[in-house]
Length: 171
Image (tube, rainbow, N blue to C red):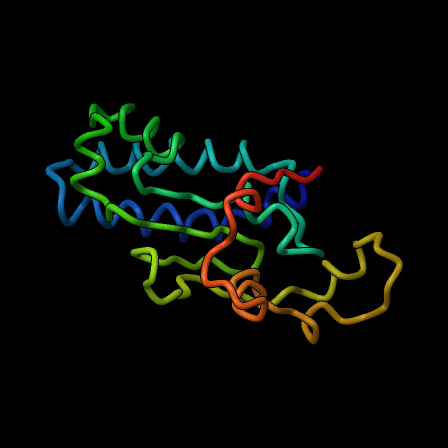
């Protein structure tokens, strides 16, 4: 599991960097506060995702790893903001009012607004050793069959996950 945790670093960094840019551009936070916010959120996300990160099955646990801001502030983003002295109300002013950020193995994407387009922030290809270390018992190539979780939802005819899907936690 430690190896899997290390592989989520680029994805978490991309997501945190994206959120941090909003604070830098729209907020009045100094570099030290921004660094503290970023490090705090990276640490919290890594801890939260450590048992929900499946490079051999990237869509598994996707709802658990979704960062969501709408009428409710994502709790981890809220905690990281409060750590640097920003209230939840201030965060609502600095961040998009409707934001969905998916942090999945090999891909980080986001959507602003309920009907907005899904944009990819970070994308990488699975390495061959991810497949060989998987204990799935199949020989199919992960790269050949890779479809993002968001593409899977679109194929199913939905533009956003249903509420029960968002709350599903797999172990």
